[in-house]
Length: 65
Image 1 (cartoon, rainbow, N blue to C red):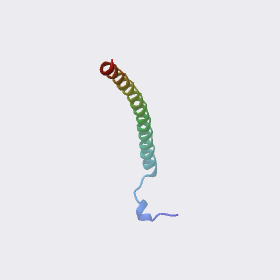
Image 2 (tube, one colour; image 1 turned 90 degrees about the vertical axis):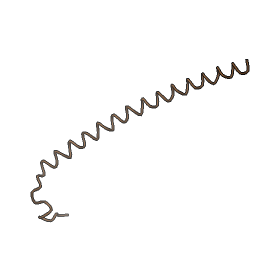
Image 3 (cartoon, rainbow, N blue to C red; image 1 turned 30 degrees about the vertical axis):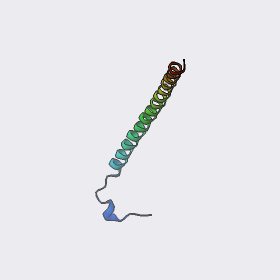
Image 4 (cartoon, rainbow, N blue to C red; image 1 turned 180 degrees about the horizontal axis):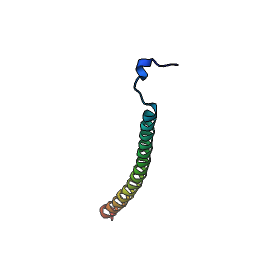
């Protein structure tokens, strides 16, 4: 599939490829950071659930002796 000459006029392919490579590197880094945040989020959620469970048990003890 070809491109119209006016569509590619003045386009620096090497510059475009470099920009795409840099954008891809930034996207990959962002995905890595999102993965780290997801792991942290899961850890904090598990910790919060454990604390809520302990508070629930203590409240039950206080209410029912």
